[in-house]
Image (cartoon, rainbow, N blue to C red; front, side, top):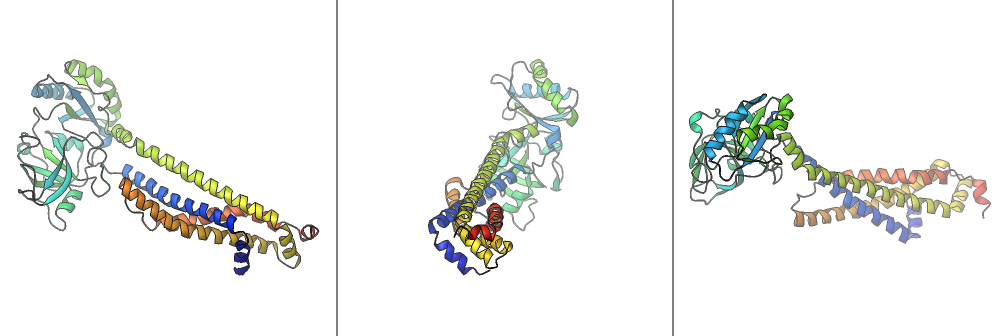
Length: 403
């Protein structure tokens, strides 16, 4: 079928054609960016924590007047005796919990070469095994690796870094034995971990969400009140349910923080609740947008079929088949949608640039554009199919009687 007669017909309906093309362009721009935002949210929720989430929980206590060493001793001893509890250790933070050790590091003592902002896990004896961390290089922490805190962290300590952080700090080099500094604290890499997400769900994007450092630390005045509990997975829910009563006996002078004292799985769910809600809203926006676009195409095509009954009848009378009429409306719709998509791709990138500037989102990958185009082409053909079939069903005799 020749395209020129179709383009000539569209020029006689410039306003309606332009409005539908603009609607499709806006749909393309929003669709591409909404799909990208959904994929970004889903990717963030799929982060590998690096710990045994099914068996771990965080217990948090507040006690301003407590002796830190005494509180730690009572909690470690008391909770360790509860049925189902495999180990209890002191730690400053857990994945998907609150930040407690975020700081900038440098690759030299003078502080001239920045290594970025990382999260330090200051953790007591037993915590490494309790977390279930997977070693890629180096030995497990030994008893004499656990150092006392000088200020914020130990002044000189061996540390275990994630592979993501090691690749960032020393690309194409063996990280074992490498050194870095945080203010006056000096660290030496004693091992490399496969994964360990930063507290707070690994904020900062896929490149930095595993910039974590495990620091063996002796519990004391600056490391108390936050505990890592490893429990038999089948008993974890029951242990947490009984925790307030148990702590009322073990540490009656401390306040149990119920909101922060949850399993790692619950902390993950709570942290990503907003992301799930946002993804759901964006899916709703996409569905509504596609529905409105489809209704617009159906409405315009139905209007044109009604207007062109005479022309359709004449074409049928001179030999056009039903398939010819059907293809005419399908090709006409394809041309309108294609024009809208071409404009929509430009609008999609303009919208993405605005989101990058105001919300620090990454650049829209190019492959989202053909995905959006295919969805809109398919939607256009489905939407025009009903009116086109009605047009193809117009009998020549009935149409020519209206002349």
